[in-house]
Length: 187
Length: 407
Image (cartoon, rainbow over all chains, first blue to last red; front, side):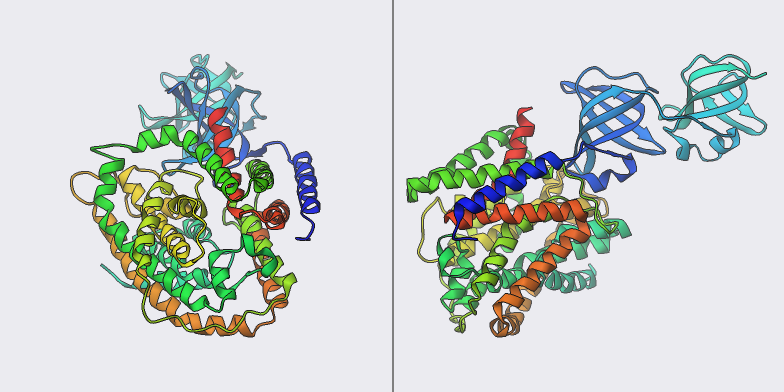
């Protein structure tokens, strides 16, 4: 093979063309699996938990099922609690894996009907996952018997309600809040 | 300070150093999965240090192609074919040990240059794309200095490697194990190790009888070892530069007949790069390798303030102690390793090593990784076939960085 440099070169070009054609779209991954995709182009969906100006663009934390990833992207910071899809390159900076790419608001996956007690017992396990819950909204909490969860953003109304939303960590109260996309009376 | 982690880490480093295709970063990723404490972190430092020294044994004794590829042969392989493999080993281990001592001795000035008061690190980072681009141009200029006819094939090798390197960033590489696999493993072993192994297997040339290394050490080991240390101080902060490129830069493109100075520089670059990249954790707060990333948390790597951080001192002691073990281990293992390789029939020997690194790539990066390895093996044959230097293949790392910086 080494006696035929042109043949070797043509074989290499042919293989690269095949690889180029066979290259899949960016893999859709869960934030918890980020370490397995270091250096690769990936897509991640999740809830925006934090978003602020950073350099020429913004830096947002996207969370799904309790696992999060920092995304550096162009444009202005996003509203908290929106469901987004990030696509970009997974790079390690300062020991931390971050995604450098773009963010776009997208339709959240189907919600999971869950008792409030489950949310209150292990909020970190539900963070970033769209949920559908029932409870009594009063003052700053959604309650169901002895269980309660802090209210976040959303069209909350006092009384027994059903809500569709997502749990997110709030550093200011060191607690999880339920950000609601929709709230309606439970009759 | 407990010496047991250093001893255990050194023993593991000897094992990984002897096995082609197994990288320290893979072990670091494995350690991260099982949890890393301070003792394991120190053991990992020892693994990495010893690995850079012991790996000269397979580098020298395995994958040496025949005379037809003389132009592209590695310096250690040139010495092996001249029956001077043991001398290459001796030069290498002493250059590595010198590099370790120099790294520890130069840590404070290195910190002054990169961090306060001179603070060149941000400047280097902002100029990195330009510097890397200049390196590619300079490699071609070096090739033109030998023969203008070599420039087009060199550019072809660069372009193909760059294309492959870019594809590697988009290919899903999930292994059969839970150890996070990097696409760099199949990419680099495919480009650099596999082609020479296959060439050696097809040539069926037996390793000639080797003569023992002379007792005295040439003076240039110190000079060229320090050149390597200087080059490694740059590669430790500039991404995408391999030891081969750093060595080419350190030798200023001269075409030297004696391969020993190049071996001294290359070995010193490898070992010093390991030391400086660990120190970078405390100096600029950056992780420059998978190993550095694994020890960052357990050793509480915080910015270097007024005094030398205690964990960094531990790392320095571990590197020096492990370096000594690595040198003694390499010298002790040289004869049995050589005897094994000299007696082994070339084709089965090199094909079995090739299968070992292919299996490692498959286990750690899955079927996509194995396909990447196969393609890299073919691309890695291009410079061998055209008779140009394989250092051009480092475009697989440099060009993706340039593209990312540009977009």
